[in-house]
Structures are given as C-alpha cells and as structure tokens.
Amino acid sequence: MIVGGLLFGTIADQGGRKNLIPISMVTIFLALLGFSFSQTYFLINFFVFVLGVGTAGSNTIIRVYLIECVPAKKRGSSLVIIDILWIIGCVLSLGLSWISIPSIINILGNEFRPNSWRVLVGLGSAPCLIMAYASSLLPYSPRYLLYRRRPQEALIILQQMFSINNSQHVNNFPSCNLNNCVRPDDDDIYTKYFFEVLKQFLLKTWKRISLIYSQKFIKYTLLFNIIRLSLFPSLIWITKWATYLSYETIYASSSNKTCSIDVGNIALHILSDCHEINNVYFEYSLIFLSSFILGESLLFFSIDTIGRRISLVVSGLIGGISILVMIYGRHQDTKNIWLMIVLASFSVIYTTTNIELLENYPTSVRGTVWGFTLILPQLTIFFLNSFATMSCWMIIYVLLGSLIGAIVATLPIPDLTNSSMKE
Image (cartoon, rainbow, N blue to C red; front, side, top):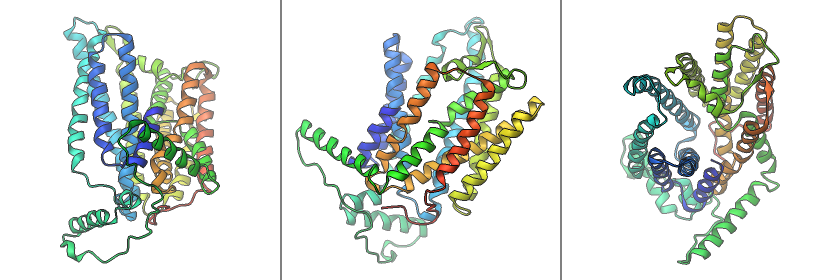
C-alpha cells in the first residue's frame, strides 16, 4: 500500500487523474483474479502485494479526482460519501462471508477447507472490472487541465457541468477568466525514449517533494504526518482491534493481560475451529463497522455547515470522554456502546483530516502528498505488528492519546470550509 499510494499519487500529478482510475481498478481486478487461482506461497504473496498497490492507488486517485471536480459548498459532503460507501461495502462483504462460510462448511462435510475463500475472491473481482469500464464516462479534472495549460478543455467541461446541474444551455454559462486560477509550473514530457521519460518523471517527482517540504508547506506536512500517525493507516485496523477487545472481554477483568495487535492474528478469530464459525466475532465486527456509518452520516450533514474544525473538536471531545467512561465502566454491554461512540468519533476525525489534507495543498502536489503522508503510519503499524506487545489497558490509553494528538495537530491548519482550495 505504501508503494501504491506513492506510485499512483506521483503519476496522477504528472499524467492526470481520470485515466488512472480505470488502471487502478484493473490492477485490483487482476490481483484478485490471480489471487484466487494462486497455488504457491510466492504467488499468493505476490498478488497480495499487487492488491495493496491497486487498493491504495484507487483510494488516492478517486479522492484527488473528486475533490477537484465538486463545488466548494459540497466538497466535504462529497468526500464523506466515499467513506460511507466504502464502509457499507465492508459491511456487505463481511455479511456475505458470514452467510457463506457455514454453507461451505456444510457442503464440504463439516470442514472448512483453505480453498473455500477462492470463490469469494474471484467473485469480488468482477465489480472492479465493471467500474473500470464505467469510469471512462467521467470528465477530466478541470483543475488539472488548467494546471497542464489546457484552459479551453477545462472551460468546456465546466460548461457541461453547469448545463447538467442547472438544466440550462451551455451558452448561458457566465463569462469567467480562468487565467492564473491554477499555477501552471510543470511541462509535458515530449519524448519517445523510456529512460528519458523515467528520468524526467523522477526529476519532477523530486521537485514536488521539495515543494511539499519547502518553507511554505513544511509546517502543514509535519502536522499531517503527525495526524496520519495518530489515526493509523485505515479504519479496518481499529475495527479489528475493537472487535478483538470486546470479544475477549478482558479489559474489564485483567489489566495486565497482553492483547494482540496483529490484524492477521486477530482475524483468525472468525473460526472457533475448523468445524464451527465464530458467530459472536462476526456480530461484533458488523456492529462496530456500523458505528462508522453512524459517525460518517452525522458528518455528512455537518461538515459543510459547521465546518471542519468544529467537527474535529466536537468529535474529539466526544471520543475522549467516551474512552474515559469505557475505562471506568463495569458492565460489558455498556462498554461496547461507548466503544461504538469512540469508533464513530474516530471515523469523523479520520475523514475530516483526509479532506483537510487535500484542500491545503495545490493541484501540482495533491496526489504526491497523499502518498507520502501514508508512509509513516504504514511503517509504524508494520513494526507494531512485528515487534510490539502491550497490555489491553495500555492500548486503550494509546487510543485516547491518539485522538488527543490528532485534534491538537489540526488546530493550526486552516479551515477551508466553503472556500477555495489552496493553489
């Protein structure tokens, strides 16, 4: 995923957004298809790697593309919809697995065989191919076209958007001056030689990295790295951990017991043994994933009205108070309810900071900065999975510190609600 975020992010800033969306979806399709037919350990790991590249690339490109195509008044809510649909997809896939696995066990003679997952993986590749074809209907990003010195094409797309959104003729589009809207500080690469193209690409990527860490943006870059590190690389990690914590019900009775923080080990709890599925684990997973939908739904109605900063501070306070109540509570069901509120707050902070990250950097580096700010949290999770062990109580305090750290780091960042993104 580190490679995918960096690769697709930097290519998007050099070669455009729209054309990379189908490429990322085809990458996921090929990875899943190859994964379902892999019979050796090397091939399984290889296609898992390709899947991570495609997933991170798709996540990067879609967000960068969408935020450049929607009006300022709907910019926040449009990005929130992406996370809502992503979480709904996780819920549906988890529910499908919950329904399918017992049937597979019964069909195979009360035994869950390692090859049973191949059918689900193969079926999961089909929607990616459909979306790759459907994405060809999308228009180009007007901001990126202006950045590439193609103002006439950008104007045509803006006129089409105006015509569709307002049910008016294109000629009624108000006159505007697109000059100097986006700073065109990059040139196209005109050469047929591969190594020359690669050399120019690396030089321009280095130029963008230098801009990200220049005096103008160094403060924001460091703050966003801290935020990313505090919020971990994705909501899936925190969901799996919360499910594991609630399922074990150990933080109420044993403060010294060591908790697993490896997502792979935690995920093994889906089966009690080779003959029986762990229904309680699936139930907790669905409940906690649904709490993300609650948080994102509230954010959808508030992010463009009350603003990013207020949404962050309020959700941070609610999440912090909920963690304290959960720590000192006694009844397990009550703790689970408070943990759901913590996860809802966590998702609000996660989505809002992602939106702020894209808003506070110019078009020329928007994809690059997304990929580079994901390096540190991904590496941190890798080392935690590999080497770290800690008590269950300690993990809860780490989560509290992460929420507080993320909120404090966002305070110096400008709130660009309903205003133009930085250029």
